[in-house]
Length: 123
Image (cartoon, rainbow, N blue to C red; front, side, top):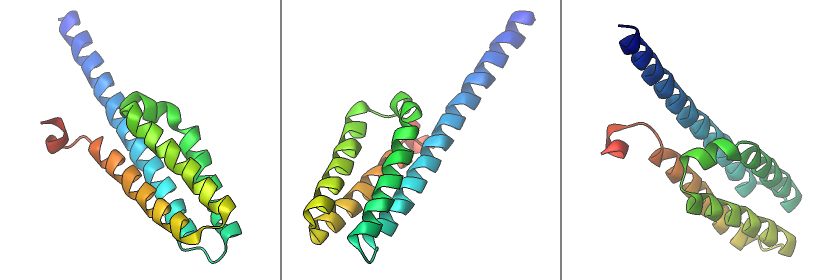
């Protein structure tokens, strides 16, 4: 009986950890996307640069949990997107910045959605 209870306890713990990690990734993605959307609609490039930097800091701070859940190629694509945003800001290319910003938002949201514990993601 002890083995059964121990096995169930381990499964419950693993389930809680998985759900917590998915929730954390979703929360991080939403924070980052909100900041990137604010950067996209900013009046000045300086304002946009500050919001992109804040989004990048949040992304990097939570990279460990993301790396444990998400395909590393997707993470590299997001990192490349942040690098592109910085480059467009330095060059003052507002149209390319806006295009890259919206593309990165879509990419991050799709990544977070694909990791949610829904039946269609499991099947």
